[in-house]
Structures are given as C-alpha cells and as structure tokens.
Length: 470
Ligand code: GDG
Picture (cartoon, rainbow, N blue to C red):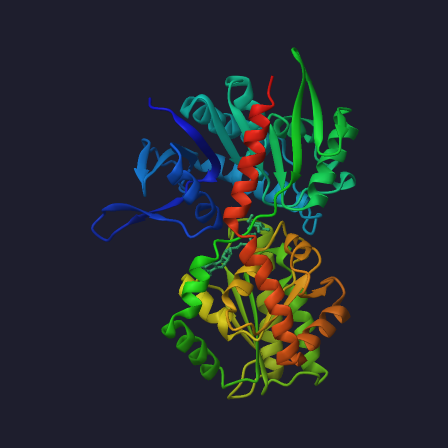
C-alpha cells in the first residue's frame, strides 16, 4: 500500500456519499468546518484521511476524492450504536459539556469504543510513511494517539480536541478516566480550544497519573526515559473567504431583504443557528425571549426570532426529548402572541445551504449564541465574518470558547434568564454607531485569526515537537 507523509484521522471522512436515482454513487465534500480547515493543508502535502463514511456496514476500498486520499473505516450497525451514539455522544459529550444532560456509563459501550479506536489506529499506522505525521481529531478518538504510538514510534502525533475538557470534579466520574488520559498522552501535542480546557486536562494528568507537569509540558515516563507532551490552546476558526464572498453577492443581499419582508418587515430580526443540541442553550434563549414578549418589553409586531435548529443525533434519547421540549415552548409562545401578520418565533428544524445561512446572517440585527457550554462555536465567527456592513449585534455566552476572543460581543450568562433578557434588550436597542464600533473590532479578530492561522499554529507546534525529539 502507498503511504502518506501526513495522515488525518477523524470520525468522519470529509465527504458524503450521494446515490442518484439511477443508483450511481458519487462523493460530495461535506460542508463541515474541519474539511475547510484541512483541505488547503492536505493539498500542499502528500496526505491521506482516515474516517468513517457515515453509513453502517459500508465496506469501501480506499479512494481519492477532490485530490485527497480517503481511507474508509467500516462500522457495523452495533458499533454505530455503541461507539458513536453511545460512548461518544451519550457518555463523553454530556460529561465534557458539564453534565448538562446526565452521561450514561455502560461497559459494553466502552468496549466498543476501545475496539473501534483500535481499528482507526491500525488504519492510520498502516497509512503513514516513515517519520510521517498523524493528526487525530476529537473526542470520538481519544485512545488513538497512544495506539498509533505503540504501533509506530517513529511517527509524530498531534491530537486536537474540538469540545471542552471538563474540570476534574466532573472528569473524575468517568470510569475509564485513566485510560482516556493515557490515550491522549500518546500524542506529542494535545491541543484544546481554550486555555481553560488545557488547564483542566493538565490538572487531571497531574492528579490521576501523578506525572510531572510544568506550564504546558508533561513528562510522560517510559522505558527509555521521559517523553515530553505539549498541551495548550489553539482556538479554531473559520475559512472567512466564502463568507465575505457570499455577503458581497447581490442575490444573497436581496434574499436577506426578502426574508425580512416575508416576516412582515419587523424592526428587529433576532437569529439563532444551532444543531438541535442541549448544549446550545436554545431552551434558555426561547424562555428569555418569551418572557420579554409576555412582559411587553418586546412587541410581536416589531420583532421576530428566527431559530434554525438543524437536525442532530436523532436516535439519542436526550435529543428526542429536547426536541419535544423546544417545540412545545415555541408553539406555546407563538400561540400566545402571534397575530395573523406577525409571528414571534419562526422555528425551522431543517438544514440549509450556506448561501441561505449567509442571507440569514445578513438579515439578523441580533445574533443569539447562548450555549451553556461550547468548545468554540463557529456560528458566532461566521456571523461576524458575514457582516461586511459593520452592522448587527452578537450576543455571546461566556461559556463558549469564542467568548475568549470576541470581547466586543454583548456577553451573557445564559443560565441567568434575567441577564439573558437584559442582553437581548441591550442588543435590540443598540445604536448603529455602537454596533459599528463593536463589529469592526470583532471582524478584525476573526479575519486575522482565521482557520489557516489555526492549522498553521498547530502544525508549527507539531514540527517543533518533532525536532525536539531525542
Ligand atoms: C463542534 C464543537 C466547535 C449548522 N446548521 C447548519 C449549518 N450549520 C453549521 C454552522 C457551523 C457548524 O454547522 C456548527 O459549528 P459549531 O462550532 O457552531 O458547533 P458544533 O457543530 O457543535 O461543532 C464546537 C466546532 O466543533 C469546531 O471545532 O466550534 O464548539 O461543539 O459552521 O454554520 N450549516 C449549513 N446549514 C445548516 O442548516 N450550511
């Protein structure tokens, strides 16, 4: 088998399988941020990508799509249920997001997680060239760094964690807490979104494994002496170019006006865009907004909230229940306040093409990002990048990674409904002058610190780690 100098390992391949009506199979680049982030890197180097094609029981040979060599990993239906929907999305996801929903601990899920991680690691170890680099992504694959190192000690390994890492008091609940730490420490560089995440990780390493931690380095004891692991923050960002380009298109701007008109020309449009996930604070946002309407601080003739809640993890119980709760809350508020001409909440449980997303960003006077916990939150950055007119207000939860960077947003604690209501009112009433001042500074940050800056800084840390190896 041909090998590659640079191998990305992620739960999903960067493509989606599309089968046409006549049964012909094609592959379409998936719209996710990771693909956009890594595509330019993959095109410069001799690269390969190990991942799952997104469908159970699909057996595929390695193939090339958009100049990237893809190495598909097969998962059985049972593995999808236990490794992916189970351990990744119903154990680690809630635990790492501050137990907003109760994490489920099941030994058979853990067993599936170990064996699927091993499959990914073996594929990566087989695909990477002598002295090459492997970059592992995210919480589904926390054991892969250690497994790759055992198989291929010559290789430089990076790991990036896209979601939060919890404080020790919560992390300690995980029955497999030591195994997961050892898995991650197989990497040379373990990257997180926020300084806080790296700090919590390093504290867990010190407390659980008793390894020596100095600033951002860990001394991992081994047979041939200590090995150094670097762990720090590399805040992820977006590819800004498509947002700038779409925001400048006359038809996208016309569509933004059309959206406003079709809602009865409200004075203010508020917008939420999230995967339908309990971490995103959609319920809190809707509650605060509903109370503002009920108290007459906002008027349905003058404001509309557009809530895009794109379908997500629809077979996990917590998500099924959340959907019911949100839809009940939305219909109550609409039932109580709508008129024939105006609606309080235009709720859309659908996914949209990117052009429509940018039209929504341009239509929105106020963008509500009220996550209870979020690794970064790219929607906040996309909104800012799209506002080439320097208008609009971003309301941003303190509990997002983005809050560390986007200091000129209206900051909010979404657990505090009164604070949330005041933040919404501040945003709705903000003068154009104040909006412009804040938006210009937010835009400077996002445009300077784009996804290329992110991948470059991570890869520089990896190559520094490589050259300092004995
Ligand atoms: C994880 C971490 C971290 C959503 N609906 C539609 C749509 N989207 C796009 C958004 C955005 C992306 O999905 C969501 O990214 P987020 O960062 O907001 O959140 P997660 O999905 O939870 O991502 C997160 C991220 O990884 C990266 O490290 O920031 O904290 O949880 O790009 O625009 N896109 C389209 N139609 C939709 O309906 N086209």
